[in-house]
Image (tube, rainbow, N blue to C red):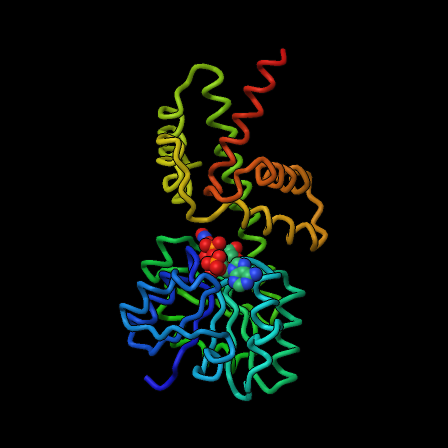
Length: 293
Ligand code: NAP
């Protein structure tokens, strides 16, 4: 396999994705702001790079899987960032969820220094990232998509090319809008049932055996029943994605309250928990309302 991959960002998603490239036979250089998160991958054969610029110099393709627009911009544009290195001919793939505007800016700036850019945000959480079964949404030139495909095949069950840079970011924000609606809907349904004497266990059974049930409701049901919310997809990222969606000037009856609810949950301290912890935030509101009656 000819190409050496540079991987920046070893969070909940980036770690298992980079690991799949290693397992797939690629030489993988890794960088993470918190260096210790690379230890396991280094034991498994990855090369840790002290700086982003050295990672860039030593790699043919550089993938970023980072928290948000600000993190991605700092890795590309900050002092010693990707675009400060010698990058002619390199392919940058940003798989983090960012705004279409940021994605287009990164493409322009990459082109200006002779590099290629592809946006490739993903649908699917930690388990599909571990299993290499993510759904990858790609935006960029056909040539850049083709160049990325062998690598993307190690990470996902399918890669969809949606057109020029920006298109995949819009698609990603749209699918996460549906995700947020579904999870808040599930939370409100369970709380409504419980308030009226139907247990969460029974209600989740009904949801999951009915036409309303889905892979998503089934994955999230155990978290509700066990009342523990270890982050697969942290709530703070959903609040970010809904904010980005609203910045695209969507104005549906549910878009504002939906975004406001997740933002309020973030401000109330649920940001580091899994997104399903929206039910904890909503339950708190119900019990506060009950005590003030
Ligand atoms: P995460 O666990 O919070 O990891 C975030 C990564 O970004 C870490 O490597 C973190 O470094 C790095 N980072 C944050 N701020 C930074 C900064 N200013 N400079 C440099 N590095 C910075 O996030 P994740 O769950 O892996 O998600 C990554 C992206 O994928 C997000 O855009 C998210 O919306 C998207 N996504 C997530 C899921 C999911 O289920 N988790 C699914 C689909 C898409 P440190 O380790 O040093 O903090």
